[in-house]
Length: 245
Figure: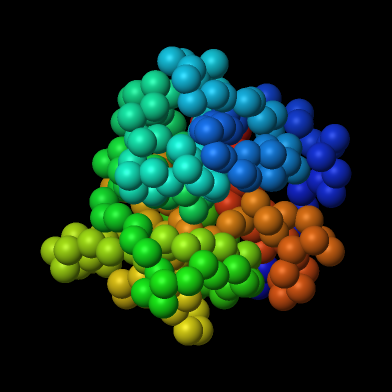
């Protein structure tokens, strides 16, 4: 089964839910516009947030998109973790706001201690860009409710520092508490321990993943498998959950 495909097919349609989702832009962010388009296609209104902002402008959820924040200096996501906007993001996440980190956004979530572990250089020491099969391990988070447990999806992957690592104790806890959200299928693309592609916090409102669901939200533009829309469910899940509140 593929992700729900009832969302509008143009960026101009479907913003009548009353839900707004902030998309944060850091210096070096690349995929903020893609994330904003995915939000609009899911029926919500994207709101541009800047790394130097001190508030979240009243949004209902936040996305930290992919890219190379601050040039990946020091360590991927490390400097962004100290950006002014992140103080508001951390506080909002602690209060239950849905927060999604994609690729560099996942790195920032780990550096901000909203998620455990870290992302390190790919074990083969090369940047990788390909369509990637994932297994949905947890369909009970705010960001995965429109998927089915055990569903296999395909979305693009592109990273140079995508290897997820953590101590055995943390890994065991993630496994035992069903906090592994996505797991790589097929050859491991970056050396992530236990094939982990995405995780969540204990409450299920904060999710980070390395692959890019925002690049698989429109038929004909994403991976051929799944009709190119396997990433839709990430964004529609959050909108549906927020509308139901």
